[in-house]
Amino acid sequence: MARRRDVVALVAIVCAIGGAVAGATAALIAALVLTPTEPVTAGDVALMALGYGATTAVVAAGLGTAVAFGALRRVSLRRILVCGTLGTAAGLGYGWLGGPWAWHHFGQMGVVGFLIGAVLARLTSRGLKAKLESERVEASA
Image (cartoon, rainbow, N blue to C red; front, side, top):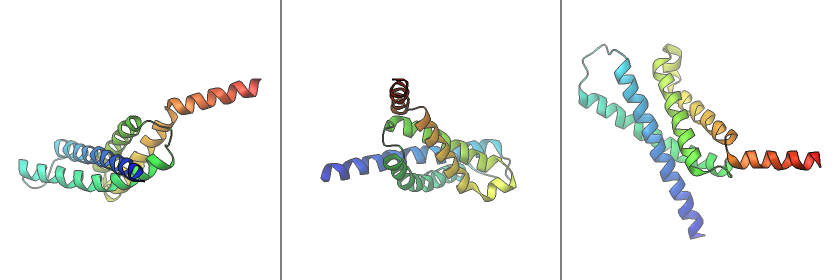
């Protein structure tokens, strides 16, 4: 039982790291692209990146772990992390850069981006390809 708890904790930590990277990356991209109405210091940008990174890390620890052990059981953790992080960063980036509608749905854009990344991880998984291949062979026999 302790081993299972350790594995779940490790997956949550890895998902939190991926979420922190995605949140901070999206905030830094927004800071580079958007023109602020007030003067912004490097400290303000760093605090914004840390804030969004920390918030996204907390959400990713819960959502990422649930998806990893739920829908993506046969997908490698590396693939989940890479696709989920890229999807989250893309969703959050769109939330920053997509205009007024996207600004008001910033968090949802990050979650949708993560879920799209998870679907991409599942579709590109070797386990799914092997399962489909074996089903095709069985059907033709």
